[in-house]
Amino acid sequence: MAFFDILKCTALYTFYSVTFFAIGVFSYRLLLHPLRGYPGPFVAKISDAHNGFFAINKRLHIVTREDHIKYGSVMRHGPNKLVFNTVQALHDIYGNERFIKSHIYNATTQTPGVYNTFNVIDKDAHRSKLKIVGKVVNERGMRFFEPTMQEQINIFLRTLGESSSESSASPVNMTDNIRNLACDIIGLLAFGYPLELQTTATNHFMVKGMALANWLVNTRMQWFRIQQSRINDLLILLDTGVREQYKRLLERMIKGRLSEDKHIRHDLYSIASEANEDLANPGGSIRLSDIWAEAAAFFPAGAFSTSGALSALFFYLVRYPECYDRLASEIRSTFSNRAEIKSGPQLSSCLYLRACIDESLRISPPVPGTLWRERASSDNDPRPIIVEGHEIPKGIQVGVNSYALHHNDAYFPEPFRFMPERWLPSESSEEQRKIMNAAFSPFSIGYRTCAGKSMAYLESSLVIALTLWYFDFEAAPGKLAMVGGGTPGSLDGRAHTNEYQLYDTFNGAHDGPYLVFRPREDYIKDFRLRGQGSS
Image (cartoon, rainbow, N blue to C red; front, side, top):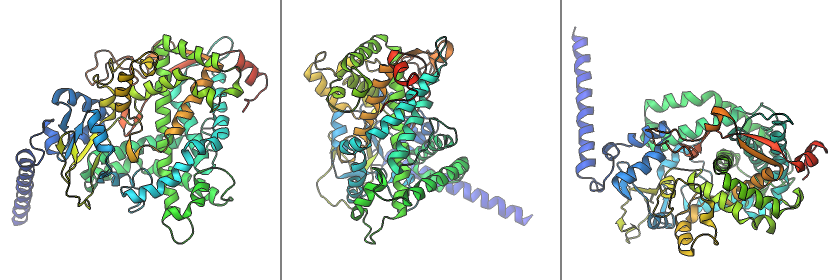
């Protein structure tokens, strides 16, 4: 009996201790905290569980925008977090090098102390890594890599052609096809490794694995303390199997590349070899851990971001026939044959194509969430850091939500309408374009802007231009036509039927659209009659 009395007393003591501790913490956060005067959801003021919950159900970007409508352009979205929804704040935060990436990016590391270009927090280490990665994906690097990219796009085009016949056409899920294309391109760009997702199902598991990993990592980032809880142990169990498969595949890719001559092709490994001193490795050889870390970032950043932008653009083109017709006309009048569709002055002259890509990136940004920043703990500069008139002390995270900002009608009138012409000098005022460009941040801004921006624009431009050169396409018949869009009357912020729906897993997850393709004469001439694509 005494044992049970002791057990009961221990349980009660633990309960009361935890309760009083929680009351004390919550009271401080509500009544004494430096952010106590800022508006925001009640739960968000006392716990990051607010953001964690909506990260779990992949709606945090939508909720953030809705909360801005309710609470204003600056609000408390966590006990130690302020999120803004203005152009001024965008530039005050991401344009100020005294702000560094938040400590929550540590949740994305695979090995403690080993960082990649995406998650490294130290500014000097980031610059060192960026010198290497930047050479792979900048405009000059893309000139070397473009022939390989074109070969993979040819496979993509053949897949679309095989979905149709003279009498019928099978619906194509563009998310699947574009993601397979993007992964194949990244595999070759990183290590010259042919993943062949477009032609075989062997490595399709990696797409599922990356999607799951993105969701888990985003949950940990938004609810950072979850990493010290039993909930994190449950999350780890969810992806153990797929994660091990993915690690074995990366190991094959890396070891295969290490066995080849360093300079056999233009890829991440060859560039890293040339700039070995920038890896901060005085031993004279590239650390395998650095290669692993960059590979872990290359695939989700390169493949998922591009596939989101392209899938969204295909969705909007079939939902807005006048835009489809105008873009098809531009492509088919600018080029006279397939060989001309490549990087260069002709492709750059397709202003409406670029406007369509930008408008798609605006409505459906590949990273729809908030990129959190904070003052470095080592920042001893006595000058205050001001964000839109608000002084930001140490320990406070700040950010701008790209989805909310891109749907702020103060900068983008009719924000849920796909209007590529808003970006054209001939159809909008210089003042309006200046306002929009200042608010446009699909790749972030400042010294941590996305290194792969040039690659994303080139890949998107080539895929859209070549698809419209070879095919006419439209939405699939029946219910499949609705996949990717919102649901009328939905109460979860997804009621816009003509908005391509993103699911916030840091990178925006998505599905559809389902399209049917009908080959034009040039496809039959270049692919079916010759039996292969031209480069």
